[in-house]
Image 1 (tube, rainbow, N blue to C red):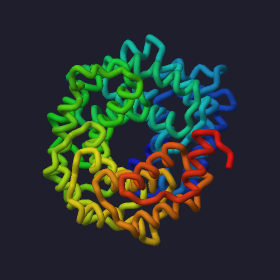
Image 2: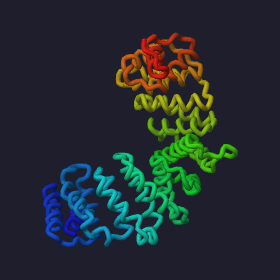
Image 3: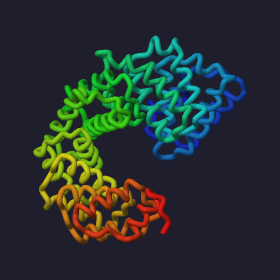
Image 4: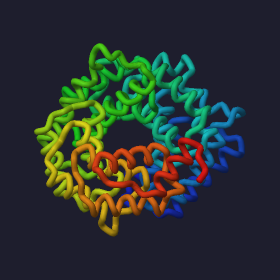
Length: 399
């Protein structure tokens, strides 16, 4: 409680003080002292707020204490409520703690009936958003299993009218990161909440929701979980996301633009006026674009039939600048997109192909296929080494 008092009444607390308080908590815990859940959760959250960005080492005793409290022998988690558990999961994200045993223990406590029967939509959103982030950082079969259980147990709570727009947006992103494509009626509901309130949300948040729709569509298509006879309901929301972002395009970053155009390409949102607005903003922030963003932007444009070659070449030539390093996958994606859009820039083709050849041991079969397609479409002979790599990897031919 002392740390909570400090953060409320003092602007600055010395790291030494924070460390000492954390060590005291750890000593009390290891000495058999029972820590009241609210007091510990508040102390942990305050420590993260005070030192998480400036002196992360101070958090060490607090995280050690949490690990001790989450052992099977300790009764701490059985005394916590849904709100406290949601804050514990969020604290793991903010402190960048990837201890699987702690996360699994908390997840096991969350799926207990006493928690799932009383949890609120806000608490459900906080848990799903945080858990998907942690599971992405340190993937494991056990974490993925509990991640699915959490979506299954907590998802229905999100159908409540009490789910707020920013919470709905966060969980949409969680669904996409977790690749959870079951019970997508919930995802449809969340997308509708966001689309009705898109103007009140930051552009970055709406761009992530648009990307999430594209990712879910890709996952559904790949698993044949999609009914091809009718468009998924979230497609309408995605179209509205794109339109609202076009009206605020000057606020979009390179990452936002890459997410938007990639999703438009994936969802076949062929709104060339919106795409033109995004392209104009891309040329404005082009110095912030690196290989990943450029590849996704050009790929998306190629899928929706964008045909203005001047801005396409301008964006693609960013790949030739010294501060941009591209992987074979990114280079192949750019070549594929350029060829699809009818761009035949010799310098871009030569430089990106040479870059790929210098990393030939890292080239995947898909990257080889995309590059060969690009050269064929552009009527340019591919490097012999690329053909040899294709023959070896795909056909098993040894030269």
